[in-house]
Image (cartoon, rainbow, N blue to C red; front, side, top):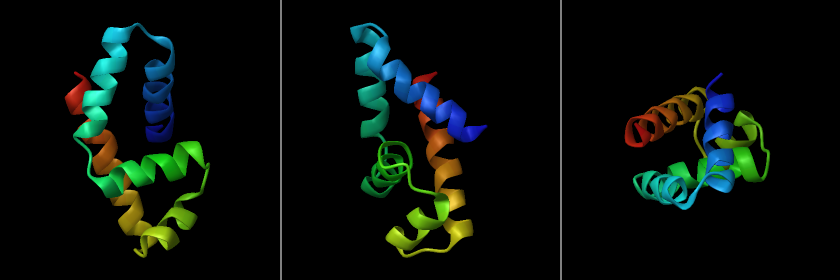
Length: 79
């Protein structure tokens, strides 16, 4: 469900008017470089969570926690 929410948010950035695009850009600026990398790995490269964990050199539970925090932060900023 969280992946679906983030995928929807990313699609919004591509399809909605300029105002939304700017809002999404601002939201992504609030993320750390590590979180932006995670978004890229998951939704651009299509890597699994375990592959992302290996790239980030952290445990699978650690990458899951990072994903949850990142999605919560994006939701907070976008509201």
